[in-house]
Image (cartoon, rainbow, N blue to C red; front, side):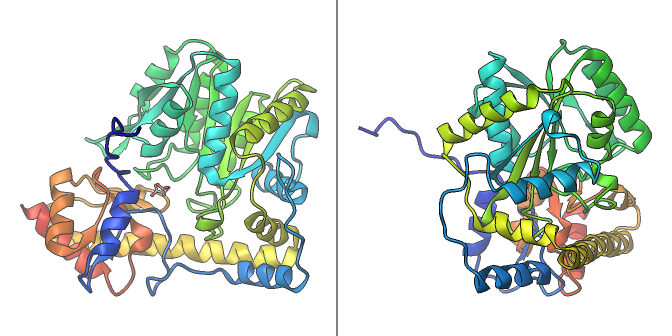
Length: 396
Ligand code: LMR
C-alpha cells in the first residue's frame, strides 16, 4: 500500500538537532535550532512560568476541551501584549489561540487559501525554511522578494521596495516585525515607515510573523510595525509565539490575530478561523495557554517575566559582542561588526554550506547550512572554542 512513498529527506533545522543528539563528542556545541540556552547551556524554566505553574497545580482546572478559538483570558492577554493597552475593539480584531507560531501560520494560510483561491505569498529571501513548507502545504505558490544583501550583510532595501512595488493589489507579503530569521537583519524605523507606506499605497496584505517579541529592542519597540498598521487602519494577519519569549517550546503556545479595518468584519473572520481550527485539530491544548494567561494577567508575575525576558535579550547581545570580538582577534583582516548590527537569537555569519559542514565534522559545532548560528546557544564556556573553530574554517 505504501511502497510508492519516498523517504523523507529531513527538515533542514530539526534534523540537525537529531544529528547533534547522536553526536558523542563531549565538547559539541549546538548553534542550530532557535532555542535560548542560559549561561550554563541549559534551557531555562523561567521563574515567572514556574510560579504560574505552581499556582495552577494548587487549584487544578478540569482538562475539558477549550473552545475552538482557545482560552478567553489567554486570547485577551495576547491581544493586549501585541496591540497595547488601548487595543483595537472586538469588532476589528479576531484572535485565536494556536499551536505555536507555526500553527498560527497554518491557520492563517488555510483561511486565505479558502477565501482568496490560488493564493501566492511573497516571502523574504531568505526566510525561515518552514515558511515555504507551511504555505506551500496550504496550497500557496511562494515567491520571493529581495531582503538580504550578502555584499553589505544588511538589508537589500531598495531592491525590496522595488519588488514590492510591482506586486498585484491584494498580494500577501510575509514580514518579520523584528529579529528576522535567519539573518537578524531588521529594517530601521524609517525604513519600516517606507515599507508600510508602500504596502498601504499598493493595497498589499501583510502577514506578520512575530516569534521574538522583546528579543530585539523591547516588547513595545519590537511590535511597532504591527501597531503602525493598526493606526493606519490597514488589514493584516499576525502570528505570534510564546516558545522563545516564555521558554515554552514544547507547550506549543501561539496565536493568530487578524486585524479588520472595517467594523463588524472581525466576527465573520473569527467564525471562519474557528471553522479552520475545527477542521484541522478541533481545539487547542490548554496548559501552556493557562500559564501565559496567568503570567500576563498578574501584575507581579508579568513584571518578573519582563525582567527575565530582558535578561535573555541582554545575554544574547553580550554573546554577540563576545563572539565578534574574539573573531576579530582571530581573523584580524576581516570585519565582523555586522554581527553586532543583527538582532535576536541568530547570527548570519556568511559561512558557506561547506564551511558549516567543516564546523560540524571537525569541531562539533552545529550551525544551519545557510550559515545561521543561534547566538543564544553561546556561553562563557564555549564562545572561545566556537570563535576559534569559525576562524579556522574561514582561514580555509
Ligand atoms: C528555528 O528557526 O530554529 C526555530 O524557529 C525552530 C524551528 O522550528 O525551526
